[in-house]
Length: 223
Ligand SMILES: O=C1O[C@H](COP(=O)(O)O)[C@@H](O)[C@H](O)[C@H]1O
Image (tube, rainbow, N blue to C red):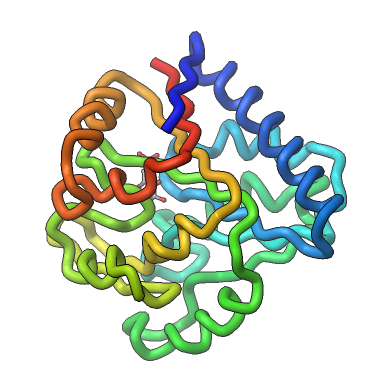
């Protein structure tokens, strides 16, 4: 992994958005369609605000999340809500969105259907992830039910995750699929997450799931 430090989050958001714009443009020169995978949570919103205004052929970009909370798209905790409101607006409104959620009580009931659309769009061209201070990335939480399956070498594309530390059932991309990305970025802010990243580098992915995706990843950090 390589660590890039920024003086503040505003600089990080602008710089990362410009880097992603360059990578998307280069990928669009090579491929008919490109797949951009983005995190949910709070961190990426200001970066989305910059990225959505970039002038590129968004009609050939597929956008999906690294992970989703099993709640309807209009729910305040839905990662899709964030992406629709902050990324898929302006120029980026022309992108095609690939959902990780469908109306069903449990992900297991619809996972196969969701996986078909995602599998057709793979591999990921550009992967952007977030991380929690507990060293989770996407929805790969330490100790979660489903973590082993998500870390397996022969993991499926999508894995349902249940953790007593979070309210909702989650669906996450597996580490195998995330590591298939051509380019990988991790966005983190604050001292607690920086310390967590340092701890994770000395641990296995079972204890520190973010460790599973750090190889060849560009980590972007602001205080
Ligand atoms: O639950 C989640 O958490 C991580 C980190 O979120 P943040 O609010 O601390 O930025 C996020 O990357 C993931 O997509 C999300 O579902």
